[in-house]
Image 1 (cartoon, rainbow, N blue to C red):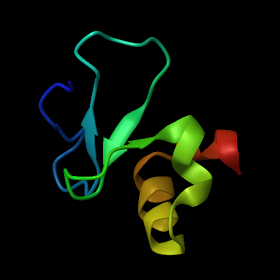
Image 2: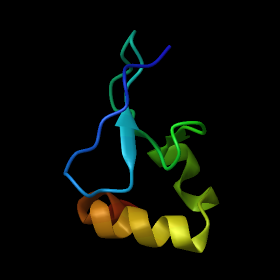
Image 3: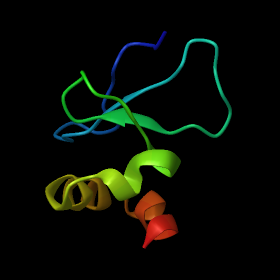
Length: 66
């Protein structure tokens, strides 16, 4: 079960969410509110377009993977 989706900044394309029971250190996000990605597990599975969007909106997190 997840919390409601939210955007960090107005105009962002990425939606963020959290598990209701809360797992420390998880960064859960979605591009369409249907498929939820875990940053540490799924970043490398993103399409080039998704990576471009993610990296632009979250440069500090992206630096951990690039």
